[in-house]
Length: 264
Image (cartoon, rainbow, N blue to C red):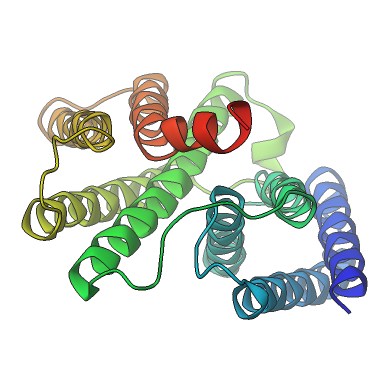
């Protein structure tokens, strides 16, 4: 059952990503009627795989690969919904392929010790807030990259912009800043909940997470402040987002990756 679901899900993701890519370069409206249903089927299959993995887990835990798969589903769903409001065909093929890669890892690698369900409500809330913040800020990086790409296309007066393949520069910038503010607020809430519910945020195993997450939050806060006070070029916004998500990734997954895969 799970094997069939896995094959169908990755096939739908690949097919949808391919159609989005063709739609981006050929601007064919006819491809939409195939790409959207395929993406929805892939998302349903992906979510079903996550639900089955939770039910079949014997160790009551969230492994690193499972968390990555859950984040991939969240990012793909968000980008799919956003495409109905503002065109983002540039990244829909990317998130589809990324989801295939992540769920393939989650499907092939065995689960290992992670987040136990017998934790307190406060601690679980801290973890969930952290994951949501990471997902939102990861999407923000995609929009920042799209912003830089559109800015480049405008500078060279590309036909891509003239033919309506890409959204307006200001529209992407507004969404990106809103996502950055939202993600920063959620990240701040996650840090505050950690100081409240985690016994010692600077103890062994937590100190690097706390420091790196705080540095990431400060990076986003400085970026937002500079943007509203002085204005930042698209290239600088991308750099800030790359640094922020790198610090956050290192804080969230760095030690777990070493312990779960490299050391084992």
